[in-house]
Structure formats: C-alpha cells, structure tokens
Image (cartoon, rainbow, N blue to C red):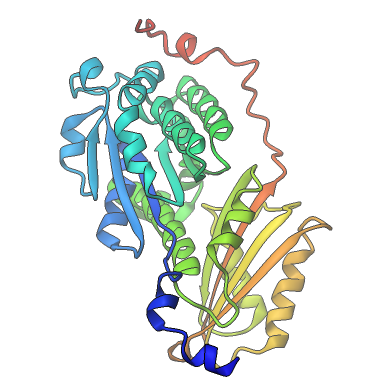
Length: 348
C-alpha cells in the first residue's frame, strides 16, 4: 500500500486539482459597474462578462469579455427602459451566451432591476445557464424609492422572474443606502453607488476564496453547490473582527445594514472562519451556537476553518445561507404588468 502511495505521480494527482470555473455576468448599467470592480480586483478563477444594449456605457467598462446585445434591435443605443426589449436583446445573443457559459461550473448573473436591459435580459442569461445545468446565482438590486413606484414595481416583477430562472437569488436594495445616516450625510452620489458595487464585489470575492483556497477544515465546490442549490432566497454575510471575542465576531458578521441579518429559518448554511493561532475551539462553538438559534431546526451547517498565522488575534467570518423563508410580499399579482407600468408600447 505504501509503495502505491509513494509511486503516485504528482502529475496524476494534479489533474484532479482544478478549481471550479466561475463566470460572472453583469447585465445592464448597474451590472457593468460591478463587473468592472470585479475585473480590477483580479479574483482567481473568475471570468467577468459585461452585457449591455448601450454600447457607449459598455465601451467604458473593463471586463474579460464585453458584448453588445440586441445590436439589431437597439443599434447600441440602449433598451429605453423597456424590459421586453432587454429580453429580446438577450435572446438575440443566445448563441454567444451559450459559448461564454459553456466552460463554467458556477454562473453569477448580476443586474440592477427597474430598467430595460438588466430587468429583461438577466433572466434570459440565467435561463440559458440553467438549461446548461450550471449552478446559477442571481444578484438583484432594487432601485431607490425616490425613483418612483412604477420603477420599483417593474423591478420587483423582474426579481420574481429572475428567481424562477436561478438556483438562488441574493436580493439587495439601494433604499438601504438611503436609510443609512452616515451615507446620507457624508457620501457623494458617486461614492454612494460605489458602496453597493463594492458590497457585491466583496460577496463574490469571499465566496470564491472559500472554494479556491485550501483550508484545514475545507469547504469545497460541492458544499457550495449543495447549499446554494437548495434554492430560495440567499445571503452572503461577511465580517472582520480585530479580536477573537465571539461577540465581536458576530457583530461584524451580522452587522452590515446593507445585507441585513434576516436569515431566520434558513435550512442550508456554510460558515467559514479564518483566524490566527489564538482562536479557540470554544470560541468557534459559541459563534455557531449563537447563529443556530435563528436557523431551522433541521439546518444543514457546513463549517470551514482556515489558519492564517499573520492574522494574529483577528478573525474573519463568512456565512452563506440559502433556503431562507421569504417573508416579503412583493404584491406582484396586484401590481400592473411591466408594460402597463412603463406605458411603453411592446416591440414586435
């Protein structure tokens, strides 16, 4: 047996060591802005694809791949706020989208909702990836309330459609920026929108590092696929504490008001902790115990741990939760349709 192990060629082993390929689609203006941050961040094993009907905006976006969709329909001038045009534009580019998606394991589809391209095209991209049997994670961003009830209604209907085409969807809302006093008083408009873009960038980065960087207690792609593949509403929460006190770790993990800590009843959880040598098993058990109070009684919790001696007494925690009971009533059925709300004639 030992002879067999000793003779096991490293080249033979290396063919099995292949990090999962993650493709990230940013659809429309808001999606493109986030894609650029991810591209500049140069995250390992991640390819960024920017899609837009607006060629001018796309031309200013940095990404691994840039694609004008709906060239015949929109002539590179945008979808005019009409999701139906955005949908047709993505359908027109189906062959190219299939080619982009083909060599991937996990696909993120990121879009701001309420406009034409993101709202209409994002579900089409997600459906193509779903049909190709990829793990599909949607990230939707709702517009500010000040942008009007019509746009919010269109956005919420867009989120509903995106949910039907993804394994799970992470829902974010620009209105949380408006409710943050520090952001309201001290942040410029440009910096304010950058906060939400950075938030999504960090979420993707943290998830990617969990499955591509080895840990002592490892979390692999199959674990992430099981948790996110459970469907429903999902969250990726993360925090960095300067000390190993469990209370401080929890405060930083759950304290981001833009993400929120409403994960009550979640049935699938990954908790990954990265810490220095001083972090104790007792501290870990206290953190897990506190989190389990709000989880489903039948929760499947996967725990990962990575030792980083350079962190000293600090701790970084990341929690991925899915199958969160959706307590929000979007009132879609009682709302006017997208086309009625927009007052835009349908394009045949």
